[in-house]
Structure formats: structure tokens, C-alpha cells
Length: 218
Ligand code: DC
Image (cartoon, rainbow, N blue to C red; front, side, top):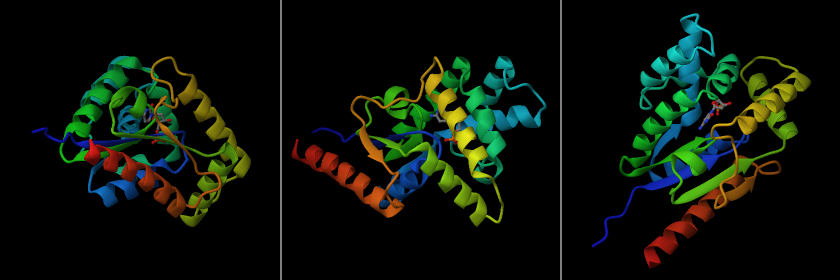
């Protein structure tokens, strides 16, 4: 008898492509645990910022990473734009990545399995994931979505500034030496530039259902 391994769905892509919403929908639908790995990097950045430490203080950053509990991440505390920018800076520190990747892997292995979204899930954290998705959208579309989110929350912003931030973040996330954002060779590409979230969810669900059906036949 073979024991089924927990199903892992790995979702990678740049900031603002719709990974988070898609990950939540898939986790709900397939009854899987959910980890937004960006929050683990944000938690490290937040810890440094609130202790008045520099973002390039490797020792303090690794200490903060050791204290991260993937099961207890406060999204409302960590969602600020400045924390995301700072997270992208601490994410270049290899020691921080090593510690967080280990915690993310342990999370993924817990039954019944999990959806993880981030930048290096299909390439580094869970290279054996049952399903890999690379979710992207043009920088312009991502900037417009971000502005709409800010406005829906009662705030205001300027499109050119948001677009410049998105391009800078892409460069940092794709250009770093350790685990840059890239599409795994076996990841399914989902370009959501022209898709509503429901369409993107149905496309992702069709991919996962295919993989599950193939597994049941084997
Ligand atoms: O997805 P997010 O905006 O919450 O991520 C914040 C930053 O964390 C992102 O710019 C890069 C980093 N990150 C990473 O390096 N690897 C991951 N798996 C997830 C996020």
C-alpha cells in the first residue's frame, strides 16, 4: 500500500499578480493549509523596524527569522507598503532565507498538505510540489490593481509612483543572487493581466484537477 503524500500547491510570481487571492481560493477549495511566505519575510522586516535596527544587520535579522512562527503571522500588522519594501531588502540575506525556508518546508509537510505562495516556492522551498503555478501580470496592470485596492480602503495614491515601486521591487526580487524570483521549468504559467480573479481561479483549479486525476490513475 502506498501512503499518499500531502498535496502541495506552489504559487510563485511578482508582487501584485494576484497570487494571494488565488492561493486563498485554492486552499479553501481543496481544504489545504495556507502559507503566504511573504509574511514570514515581512515579519523579519517588521521586527527590525520596530526595534530600530538596520535592515542590513544580518545578525539581528537572523535572530528575528528564528523567532518567526509561520502559524502565527498577523497580516494586518504586516501588510503596510513600507513593510513589504523592507521585506524585499531583508530577503536578500542568505541566512534569513535559510531559516525561513526550513520553517516553510516543515509547514508544507503537515497533513493534509498546503498551498504556499511566494517567490521561490516551486524552485527552492518545495521543488517536488505536486502542482506549480507561476502567476504573473504586466507591471501596469499590477500597479492599477494596487491603486484600486488603496482607493477601496479609503486611501489615495499616484499611479506613476506605484508603478515605479513595482518595477523596483521586481528588479530586487528577480535580480538577487540567492533564490531569485523565476519560473520553475515545470510551473504552469498563468498570466492574469486580462483575467478576473474568478477566471484565474477556474484556470488554476483545472490544472490542479488534472494533476489529481493523473495521480489517481497511477
Ligand atoms: O509577497 P510579499 O509582497 O508579501 O513579499 C514581500 C517580500 O518578501 C518580497 O518583495 C520578496 C520577499 N519574498 C521572498 O523573497 N521570497 C518569498 N518566498 C516570499 C517573499
